[in-house]
Image (cartoon, rainbow, N blue to C red; front, top):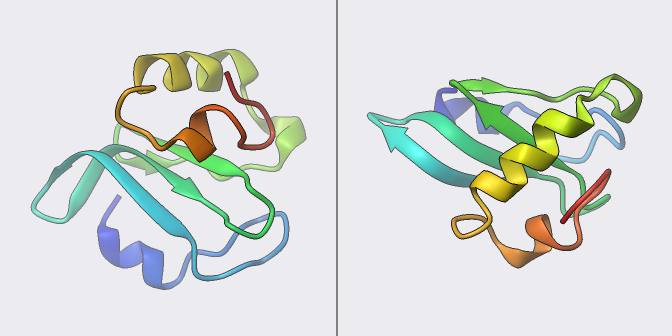
Length: 89
């Protein structure tokens, strides 16, 4: 995901803008792995293979996202790992 996308992205649940970006892997302003966080509703959205996965809760893949949290628990902030919606570790 190109970091300039953060200028236009809003939370799909509460339409909040701006969102917070946490980069895990980034090169030349392209985030290949990371997370987007909505401070209003405390939801996180993973960025996997350069794609931000910003779906409503009922369409999200819980197993994939829990695995994402486990894989990156050392690189992501505590508010995402232990407190974020719709799930956390």
